[in-house]
Figure (cartoon, rainbow, N blue to C red):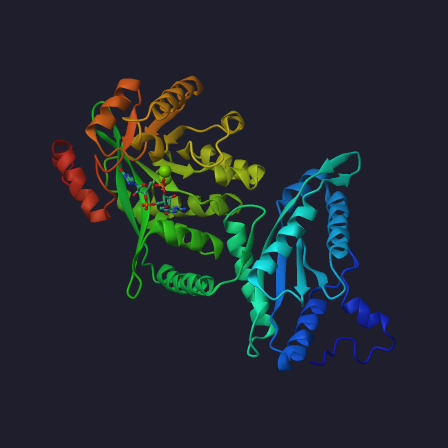
Length: 449
Ligand code: C2E
Ligand code: MG
Ligand code: MG
């Protein structure tokens, strides 16, 4: 295939510039596409497969932020030098994005070989980098795809490598994934869910359900957690553990969240005034400075008292950009919204976080509660968390209580709040009113709801 970049410009240099990454001197994305295009035409009469791969540096952004942009550039140059040095005469490496490199191995014919070569690249990049007086370490993830037949285009091949890279990144740092058919199926399913979800959000079809949170010693309901529910005509009921991550990745979480919060606060207006409403915020919303404004605008519109609202965030949400998260949390707290730390004890728990951030409440993850009766370590961990919360002046809610014996044990340890199927599953707004009518019959009769 003929490329036409630079035509009409005299001399070779302009063409070279258009194909070169100025920082590292490697070829750029145009060079890479061009090389793959050419190899595909060369292979038209030769059935031998070949490999393309995309390598993405893990955690480059924090290094850039920590050491500065100049140091970031120096590291990229060193990365480029190592990658170039590791290529043989047939192979090519180009820089196709800020911290993304692509390689082409014309003589790598099998998935095993592709994975092995990629692991070698990761190994080479894992040695320390000089940053002035200091050193930094990096890891990288790689996605590869193999060219097998004549009907594949460069774009399809690179998209497949991107899909494999996405899977590699999701499974942790320093991983290599070679593209498979199942990945294509999974990617198609994600796209179908994404499209259906976009439609559902604009049509207002995602609903809040509410799960009671109780005072463990009296069993009185003190508030409800809002949990998003979505049922699609064709896909059926899609659980939040599936659609929330897709909404986050595909940029739908903002509008989805606003829709659910609006409906939830409208529903909660008719509840007794001493009940709070709790609402989950996703990690990506804590990076978006408009999140606070959107929440406040919704409260204003629905007339819901901010003092009755609690926001649940996870530690992951605080890690991406702590300064941004802190600002959003402070803005919310200023108008009286309370902030809970959700799923405590899982993920990357750091006690340091509890010193930097002030939380009003901590929610102990279901994983500890479900094993409290038969697992000594869980019991000790829960007791330690309770003692710590008392010292730090935080309320506590234990999540996922399913059995009386678990509730009893938690009360015995001094845990004040509880949530779980034992007290009620998440149900829609109407059923929640029914639940409140039952448990508040006397009080509500007077208010004639
Ligand atoms: P989460 O915030 O930790 O919510 C608690 C989850 O535990 C809910 O799952 C709830 O239904 C489930 N659960 C409660 N009690 C029990 C129990 O006794 N046993 C068992 N096995 N499970 C119990 P759900 O509704 O599937 O939600 C999953 C996650 O999705 C939530 O975890 C939250 O992180 C996220 N999510 C749900 N709705 C929203 C939303 O509107 N916005 C955002 N950003 N995330 C949401
Ligand atoms: Mg929650
Ligand atoms: Mg939770």
